[in-house]
Amino acid sequence: MSGFGSPGKKKLKAEINVVPMIDVMLVLLIVFMIAAPMMTQGIKVELPKAAADPVDTKEDEPITVSIKQDGSYYIEFAGDPEKPRPLTEIKSIVSKILAEKPNTLVFVQADRRVQYGSVVELMAELKTSGAPSVGLITEPPRK
Image (cartoon, rainbow, N blue to C red; front, side, top):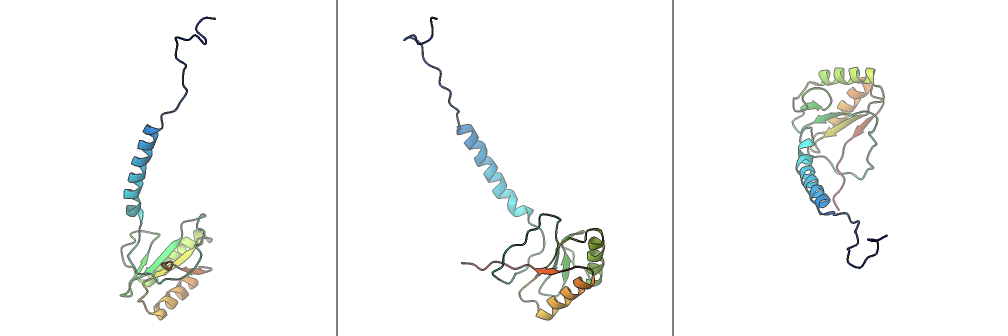
């Protein structure tokens, strides 16, 4: 029984040193802060501002069709999102995707300087391609 509680011996302390864990977390935070801007895809358009709730896109990757100010169309689902495509090609891509996955969401992302008629024309073409509904991508208003 000698050794337990004897005055000359130190007691064991069960502590966890959290400093290495904090160091690792800070490194991961820096890596994600640097990598996050590089993960965004698509073309640069200046979106109109609107107060709207975000849409839940957990099921499938949505199809995003963009219109730049010069009237060129881009699709962010198949191929290179930076390559302008004619509207007929976008319609065929959308109809093929919707034939395989009918629940895929379709969004229009238009520069705010694009004429309203161009946006409506694109939405009508997407509806004829088989899209049950077409959503608009906007930017939340700044506070």
